[in-house]
Image (cartoon, rainbow, N blue to C red; front, side, top):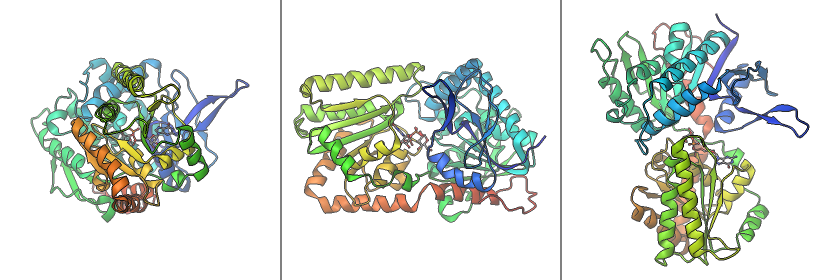
Length: 494
Ligand code: GDG
């Protein structure tokens, strides 16, 4: 069973949304994200194929090509699959577990069955479209069993896996009742990529600790040298599995397509500031409304700074864009109501009619408009309790090529490894968040040159380490990786 696609990307979602036109007809609209931008050139060059769920449950869609010639191959999910596999196991079990238990994960055997079944279904679809010896790049936590299943179905494939969220320490991961299956699934890949070294090191530690049914270790890591895989394009660490395969492990920090978010139109920026009433300082938060993002903490810090008089409600506004996310999951509903209660309380206390101090928007906006918001903001607030990378921080930096602005950044966001010149904070410590915000305010006023240098250094980092580098370095390393040890030296997609 094989198809004719030499390069296949597999992700939970296809990069399109079904939209209904005013006349009632339906069309596929691209939902361009960083991943699409990064992978499109490779997909186009290799007549690639993207396998994923099209976003509509209980319907079957035929494969179709995008204008650029990329084959989109829809995988059917029922409403029950969506509940068990996506909302359940992916987002109410794995998501909180991998984000260090910010809320308690739910371990549900039926969700696990749904997760396994959907991973099997994805594997069948990939096996059917991938050409002999094709490269398959599997994305993210929803599909961790896929590499292992595919390895059995199609030993000829070169399989890469990238995890977009953090990988927890072994002592947390070991809570997962199905930990061995998940690790075995991942170890089906030739190369496993993480955002940074600490996630990769967690995985290497785990592979050493989790025992198989025979009591033997699932894998044996060699030396821990995962740093810089993206820069050196060499795989620094390997795990030798119990069946003798050598699986590469590396750190590949994801980034953004700098051109797609580029400098904003100054007129649009001026208009936005005017709409906000020309405040002296605009602070901005942009997040999916997710409890991992620390939106409530940020609001509480802002509120205390207003209460103490350290910030003047006549001079400062906070704009919070909170994109709706996973709204049927209880913890997300709780997070939303806490955030909205805080917004109401702060505005009730410090705003005046027509002049709120927090401008809150619970819907998404076009990327171009988002770019204008980033460019307008004097201080960007990223206060995640835990975040694989956080692209918002990088997008903000990219829209300030002149070194204007300031970034408050959680030390628990993967981006803090690269953006070390930010005002780093510990979101679990409200005083630390308050301090970082005040330092950013003061520095903008009192140390403009040093602030500019910080922003320029971060801008340089983001522009020289963009999403192209992420994708090409991963694919270069995948081309070198050969866990079965019987490569015939065929070149891989570049
Ligand atoms: C996961 C990991 C990792 C947000 N609001 C709007 C909008 N966005 C866009 C942002 C940004 C993206 O969504 C969010 O990316 P993040 O990286 O900040 O966070 P997650 O969604 O949690 O992503 C994360 C990432 O995967 C990649 O590996 O960095 O750690 O959790 O690009 O701009 N885009 C538009 N309108 C909005 O209102 N158009």
